[in-house]
Length: 363
Image (tube, rainbow, N blue to C red):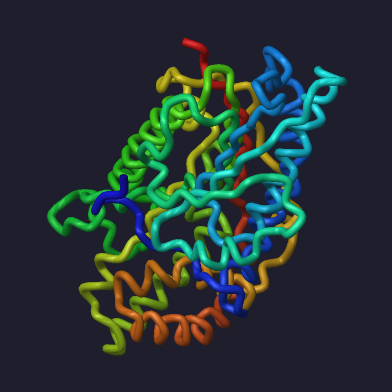
């Protein structure tokens, strides 16, 4: 169940020019470049003990996407998963009855599920259902799911660490809006929150996924030894933070609100993720690698980056500053960021995208 500590804001809904649906090409690219790893992982690691043989000669394979947003990326991912599962099943049981698929689309209660279901593919090969609520807790009965999927959702924390917004704490993050990695106490607080959240996520999924079931995770992260502040994404975030400071100095937004604003996001190293998963003890790491996203090699178009940033963070800004101030912030940022094109594109490092295939241990 969702509680007051959980992330409540969602991506911008609808299908208009500012919507997440129209501003999630990077996330779509991630689905595309992960297809081979995911399909091979399902082929090699998914296990069917017996062919379908219930009373109707049909069995149901249940899939859940945790952090589905509004589409269309989730639909593409689900289709690829089902295709891979069917291929594995047919190869193992050539003359067996067909399978049926049930897909659960999960996101926070503020998610635009109306748009999600209005745009469901007409040719879908599954029964669809929506499951609202935070994925940092239980959402399904025990041993319900055969395969869980989460793409670009788990780097969002359930909350900003308390210490980061406490002016009396050594981890107070005044002057920055993110875990840049340059302040030791701030990084420590963010890392601890990430570990708590990931452990809660893994424990919840361990209850819901059958023994031997699979989980596919794609998550934003950092190369070993690289700080967020050294990446183009981190620099972009700092430019946005500078914009907020500039507006506070001009009296356009509250200085107090600027000082207390932090992005609830954390980019981890592969080693950090591996340690969390192993210490959790419920899953075996079958595959873990970085994805080669083509957009990493492209020059950042600041205007497009702002549109994508707004589609993701507008709800968070409205929640923290209010709707009117959020509109003013993005208007100011559009002009402010024009002077930082060379700074953003001058970054010497990029973040990475981790691909992880997990198998639920059989107790």
